[in-house]
Image (cartoon, rainbow, N blue to C red; front, top):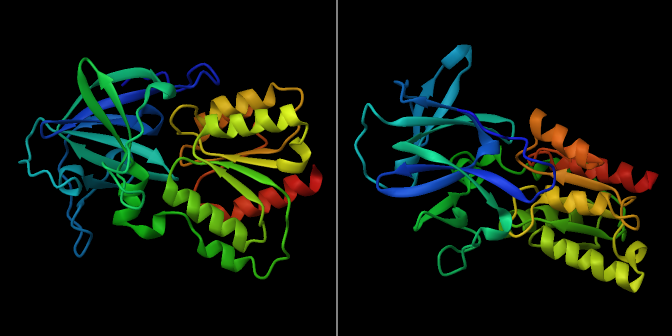
Length: 300
């Protein structure tokens, strides 16, 4: 599969791989995709989660296979023409069993429709966005949540905050951009527990940029923002676009900015470095996030 994983920096675009499960059309950010292969026989694992189909070992690396139809409650028979999408995010290699792969679409985050609460509640949302392609709707799935639902220990490691021990209260103002309500709350709670009591949470890069622009206009940047934490995947404006805007602005470029995302791998790290991010971490590493914020604020 050929993909242009390193799109031009900060353009607020992504590539979405469209695939099918049953008769339904779904999507995944190409940045999460390592490889697409035909279905291969798997070895079942006793006493595993019912949505885990089994394991297999292409190229001497063991990979867990998630039965996506099962997780989505879609009853379809196994066919020889089925496909596997092998992904990498949150430092995990996971394969998803799907029916077919349709193609890749390059879209702007601004064109992705955010599902409202009538479709999915914040704590159970499995759709992160919807795009319209050739008069059909393609639902972009929350693969991080799918894996965390199946194996909770792979999610945000909030237990790492307890390991930091008792910490002094710190009123340094931090701005956070995170579109997942559940993750936003977990990160916010973790930062508060770590002593950072003055955190403003925004739902995407656009909201964060609007707040920064207002502070700049009022001349209150130092009073309101001393550090920025941003996800990458967000509707309207993604974290890379936000990073580019901050790091090319004379009044904002010295604010420490941390990219905290499931997409931080070698390729995406290069992109973040080119954009000027001060640090980049994979989402399970909440303890390291606190340590890095400590260092960036102390040295600012």
